[in-house]
Image (cartoon, rainbow, N blue to C red):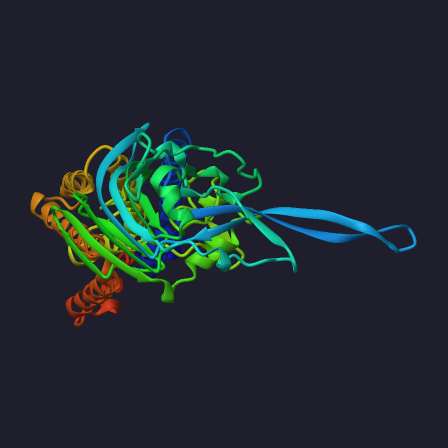
Length: 495
C-alpha cells in the first residue's frame, strides 16, 4: 500500500490532474474578485445617479416650437328622460396646435468638466449654444376641427422649449422673435395643467412678434442658452430641416441616437461634428405632436437611450411608438477602469493555467520537486494581481495601475522561484515568462477591436510552443524516472 501511494505521488498523470483541480479551486477567488469589480462599477453608476438627482442629469432638447392654445366650442342636443330634445347644451374643450420650425440650426460648444462623488469621477458638460430658424406664417384654416359645426377661439401663442432637466439651465435663455425680445417663463397664463409640455419653459409672443403672427407673417427666431448636463446631450429634429454643429475639446465622444453625425472629426484636441436631418426621414414631429396631451411616459427615461439611465422626470419625450427619435453625443470616458478590469479578469483562469504549466515544465525538465502548496501560492499570487489592478486603477491611470500590479507580481515570483528553483537565473527566467504574459494581456486590453483575434493567437502560440518543446519527450520515461527506486534486499552473510 505504501508503495502504491509513493507511485501515485510520483506519477506525472496524477500531478497533472492535481494541477487541474488546483486551477478549478483558484477560480473561486477569481470569481470573488469579479463580483467585487461589478460591485464597484455599480457604485460608480449609483454615484452618477446621485449627481443627476442633486445637480443635473443627461439632457434632451425639444424645441423651440410655437404652440397655439385654442378653445373649440360646439353645441349638443339636450334631451329629457324620454329622449326628447329640449334644447342645446354648449360644449367646449381646450386644445393646442403645434407649429414646428421650417428650419432649425444649432451651433454649440460643449465644455467638459468632471464632478466627484466619493472616489468616482463623473463627466459633465456646459453647452453654450445659439439656435436659429423660423416658423411659417400661421394659417387658422390649418387647425382641424374635432367636432362638426364647431368654432375655434384662438388664444395668444407662445414659444415652448423643453429640456429633460430644467435645473441644468444656466440663467434664462435669450429669445428674439422678429426682432422682439421675449421673456421665458416656467408657466404661462391659461396653460392647462394636464398638458405634457407644461414642464418646459414658455415665452408668450408680444409686441412686433405677436403682430406678425396675427397677420400671418413668417416668424424668424434666435435663441441663446447655456445648459449643464451629465455626459449625454440629445437633440430632437423637429424642423423641416434640422442642422447642428457641435464642438468640444473632449477627445473621446460617442455618437448615438437615431441619426449619426454626417461629418465628424475627432482628434486628441477634441471633436467637431455636423448633423443634417430632414423631416422626411424622422417621425419626431409626429411623436411630439401626439405627446402634447396625455403624458404617456416619463420623459427623461425615454428621450433617448442614454438619457434613460439617470435623468429625472420631465415631459414631451415619449409617444406610444417609443422613445423620441434624437441625435446624440456623449462625453465617453476614455478608459472605464471597471470594464477594463472585468475584461482583464476574463483571462484570469487562462493566465493561472499558463503559469502553473510553466512551473510544471520546470519541475519535469530540471528534475525538481514542487509541493502542491507551492503551486497553490503561485496561482494565488496571479489571482491577487487582478485584485491589485482593481484597487490601483481607482487611484491612478489604468496603464500606471497595470504596470504597478504587474511589476509587483513579477518581482514576487522572481524572488520566490529563485529559492524554489534553486537559482536566480531560473527564477528570473520564470519571472520573464510571467512578464511576457502580462505584456500580452495588456495588448489584448488596449486593442479592444482585435481582442478576440489576439487572444486566440496567444493561446495558439502558447500551445504550439509547448508542443514543439516537448515533441521528443518520452513521457513514460519521465514517469518511470520519477518513480521511487525499488528497495534493495539486504545481503545475506553466510555464517
